[in-house]
Image (cartoon, rainbow, N blue to C red; front, top):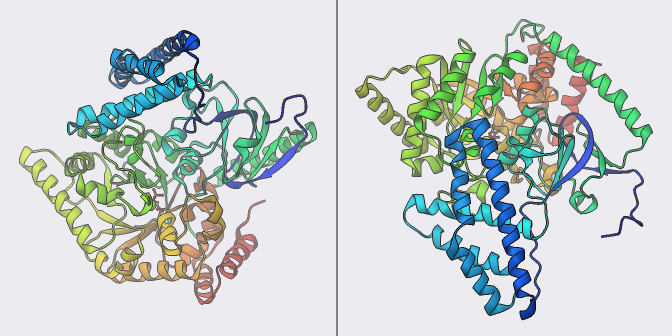
Length: 590
Ligand code: PEP
Ligand code: MG
């Protein structure tokens, strides 16, 4: 890395993938938490006292940080949530772990980072292999604490993303969805990652939090330093390092124009979503937290078409109880009633590992093809049933609907429905109220489900198409891999034919079809989807106004013609061009 004296600070524009719209200007906060590179050197016997004193200082500093975080969490979330940090403090006081590390230093003469890392790893694997679930969870505590301690030993910032200094642009190799959800919105102006794509869950979270984001910026983490000034253009996917005054002025103008446009769209979105030829289209919102129902109202959504409940689990150090889930679902249902709340059962796994769930999820070579969503739930009936009962109970308090993610076929759907039936019977026996007619649907996001839509439709009250996964699996494009992100084509003939097939089969069985993947929130595709016969669209709340504007500007007859023409094309590019032409000619608001 060059020294500051010779470091070039002239303006550089670096390309990335525009993932969440908005413009931000701030100082870089480099978040490299998971990539600790441990130095390896030997310590002379005479220096070992100083090395163990360095270890003591790091232990003290880490203890102080954990205590501060604990106090903060206690203040914001309550005593129960803060209790996890007691377990962390116990690890830092564990004389066996500390003693073993010092003995390792004496016997090997290796630097203390290596000694501590080795001992901590031994402890982690010992705990991971214990039968008892409670004890197994301690492995996660040791891993967390070891990470912090090593950061302190290496003199790196152990600052968490939730406690950033004001006005920072977070730059990371990658962000997990829970890290994105934990960003301190008042301090984090934007984030940029080296990897990722438009449909990765961290990005979906950023869009709903209205945090501008760029992904796929390749080696940005290697080019910037903490404190560098950077401008993030989340509309065009550009990162401008060391922006000049002229650039800042130009972007100031762009920001003003975008803001004015957004206000105009929001104003227009007070009107109903009715096409020029009188068809009313339900435009619903995707939410990740019960509290986001306020956003649904702000952006005039017709209720919620997808509540990604796994975020309740991602933001908690342990599996939330039935009562905790019930409280969240009930609050959302009541806030939205009489508009619907479509609650999706747990979709953990894939790019959403549960931070406190290491004992529940094994490491997998292909997590998107792995132990994810309903597959995980069917293997964990206690967790699944807690959630199903919580959803059923919430159905007594609003227009709740339930849907399963990642259904692959009729038998799997039947297994899930059998567990639901058990939960209904249990609640009935206990005299607990629920809506016996609660609609139950399936997401269609696996090709096998799409191809057997005729069978699934017989056991479903509705379908919701998850285009993020459906496209990933149809085209074999990992949805979070930036290197192949350009091949992720929503207008690929295979995608259009599959959508057409699903809608045709659903309508033949008199059930409605919604699309709740990111494709539904792009106004360029609104005419195509509605023309294909999709009944409802569900999207991140801030995207609702632009899609509603598109709906109001088109006629369903024209949309059907567009879809029919697109279905005849043999290339994704041509179909994309057709959608863009339709959008620019009939819809685009300037
Ligand atoms: C989808 O796959 O399109 C979807 C809506 O689900 P998720 O993005 O949460 O996987
Ligand atoms: Mg999905």
